[in-house]
Length: 331
Length: 290
Image 1 (cartoon, each protein chain N blue to C red):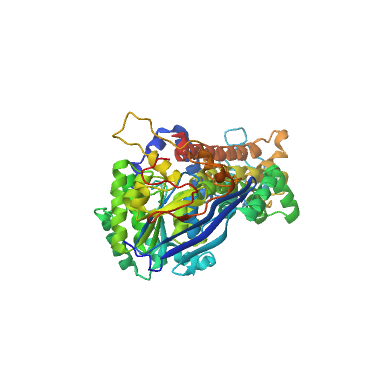
Image 2 (cartoon, helix red, strand yellow):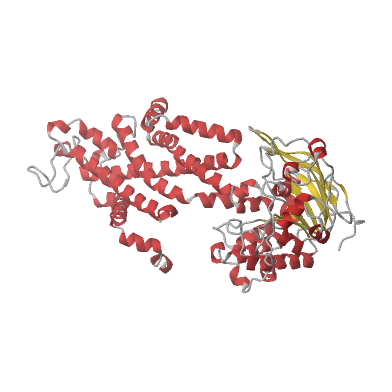
């Protein structure tokens, strides 16, 4: 799907986003690196509080006080977004990079018609006249599977169902033909039946428009269906990354293994569902050594002393673990 | 129009007697203010039409009453009924203009405080807190004694008192609005902040203001009446309802009650009507009470 030789569209390098609160500094993103090639779908996976959404907002420069990007680079086509000014970032938002949110019930303004909210984006990011903008909106609504689009443009968000609204949100995100879409849990708030429709729609739209996507989710099932590559976050660090299939079939990091094992298997009803013991440690004062060691069945004395660095494992995988898993081995 | 007649709002309105009475009273005063002065022969502000021989005539149904002056006359021979019609004009004008000014200023400050937070928020909200710890009539009184009297000064004093309630309400709703994803989505789409505030936040925080604004007109009419009664309100040549009460108050205990009581009754009915209708609006527009 992608050749490593090409210059990546987005190259995030050692990104650190910290939140300075009264209770201490929360290192929500602490040295995350990944890259996305043109046309690629990258899954960003982790538990709640793992820093997934913060990565998305950091890329768009929308980290509000008390948060701050403390270091690292976010290179979009070689341009560092961390150093870019607010004016330049506003140009990039919506036009180069756009975002799809989790909850379609609240991500549309209830007081404006769908058409007006779509038009707003085009007015901001294109030079089209009113007529051309209107037909672009109609075309886009139709392409996300909404029939009678001309009529539907005049409708208000409450006249749409949840799945339909998410289609509208996707249409808005795609309108200005962005090169990168950050989808933050785009199907979490939807019915399972609608989920797969929306995922298929996003996949097709992205392929058609040649855009890339960061798919932020805690749902490995979603990501395995969609992503070319996967990056797994834990406590603000990348613990494992690699090609989607390899990573799902035989992960090298015990945390990834734990995530995969905790997906219910309908063919095996009598066995208790596996879970990762313990909870995410307090991110304000992380222990020395490996962040995962208190929950890890393979932890040894070394894990408490030295923090493992991300290093190449078998195949396309890299993992930050002193004792990586072999294929077929359980955690 | 037919859509409105079939709406739930209109249906509930027809079933609510307090809403009917409230809006009836408001309509009555609106009419009185708009066409009332054309219905009475006398212009109480024009000394040429006054005749001192007519002074202190009782209401027409009492002995010595004159049908020309249905509610009696005051010490200068002014028709009380005509004075009420002219006075209600001034009272309502002050109430409405001060409400619009307070609402505008309060909403803008509330939006700034809520959206930007930080220092602006602290400053605006601390001023509001300080102001709320004084009785509003006291603040108005201070201001009036500092800047002098007159209709414009009354408006300034009322606005200075009235903006706080809007600022606090709008700030609160703004804080909850900007958490919603459509505001995030607007930011992500690259909209500038001023546009986000105007197009996405403002329309969504307006509903509670309709109720506050309605009730506030009544409150302002009362505060203005109190100020005029205390002698720091509108000028004596253009008496509002409050000033009419004050003028009559001097002779209230000599048995010439009508000069004070009728204007007082007019204020009461006006504010009563506004409050009844405001209560109905509050019940209708508050989704939590449904």
